[in-house]
Picture (cartoon, rainbow, N blue to C red):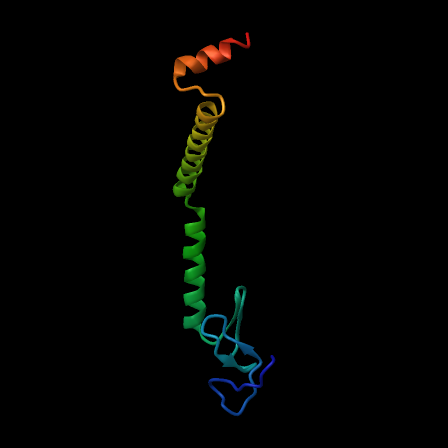
Length: 109
């Protein structure tokens, strides 16, 4: 521990850890070691455990907005590509109608 601190329950005893939930310092006797970290009380442990359970449930839900945004990005990209092709056809090749474009393509075959 970088700074010297004292236990929240025993003001004269040097702290050895911080609660994972509230960050309060605790001594060796007061620390509650669990599978998910060190806590100062059962309440802090349960708060963190419930949060992690909710977070895990959220992570398992399908992210439909990601799927939609992926397809939306593809559509926007396709629209931009079509606009670029049209601009090149109009300004560089001088094609002003669809029929002229078809005739231009047929000239290669």
